[in-house]
Amino acid sequence: VAVFKEQYFKFRKSVIANSKEIGRFCLGDHTYRSQSILLDGIFDGLANDIHDFKVLKSRQLGVSTESRALTLFWIGIHDGLKGYMVFDTDAHKEEARLELIGMIQSLPESIKFPIIKRQNRYLLELSNGSTMNFAAAGVRSSKRDGLRRRPSRKRRQRLSLLLSQNLPASPLLNLCGP
Image (cartoon, rainbow, N blue to C red; front, top):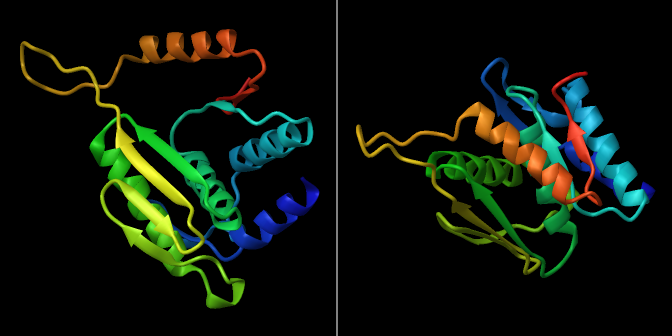
């Protein structure tokens, strides 16, 4: 795990991402406390043979970007992996897919990361044979007004609590504060 962690931190120094606040930035040069907590929790879990993580977070903490970069690194260093990312809406799916493509395209050739072999709305395939599939789970819609809505905050909290109670082997990383 220590070698993997070291290699990931080298990798993230080459990852370029976009932020609403500061525009394009190097992930390794701008680390929020929430991202450090996330990575510490994941690497500590991996060191203890835990491989399934649930993350409870609020918005705008950089956690989604960090976890996407970590996922990208994982499929990049392991040949032939099959991954799946599921999002609540098609718009969020597309945002994540484009972010991953942008991260790959921003990497310098010197790190020898696999290149994009094939990609479309549903798939990203790397030259090492690893693939990432993308899907939108959809959200509830209102019959009355036809609008698509996200599940309520209360329902999302109940689902998060339910997930953490039913899967005790999976640590719940709470990034929302005390």
